[in-house]
Length: 146
Image (cartoon, rainbow, N blue to C red; front, top):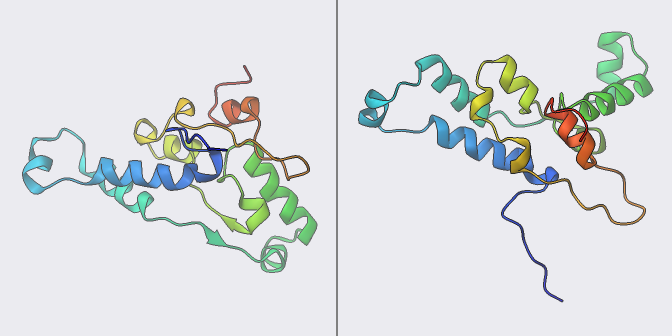
């Protein structure tokens, strides 16, 4: 049985594809940069964001710092993931990444990110933890449910 790979990354591999896209948008030689109309602030932001990896978190540390319980911390991370504020898989792995469309848009470099049509929802095996459905994926890109 052969597996057909799509050119469109799955949601779980989206963050790596996103970082590659940001890195490509920021990279240029001096002469290429001189001919570009992209402002220097955006270039620096794109380069920094491309190198910004997810960070590990300890629910106990966050609970102590915020006054939340550990359960509330986990629930908040899951809610942020569902709303597209942190990268998919953050709640499951304990590694929160913020290179998502809402953050890119807030920083003024949303046009350099991957669009919703550039990613597909993962097909979840029976009994597996749910990643985002197609509707939830569209909503996380501020497109609303289809």
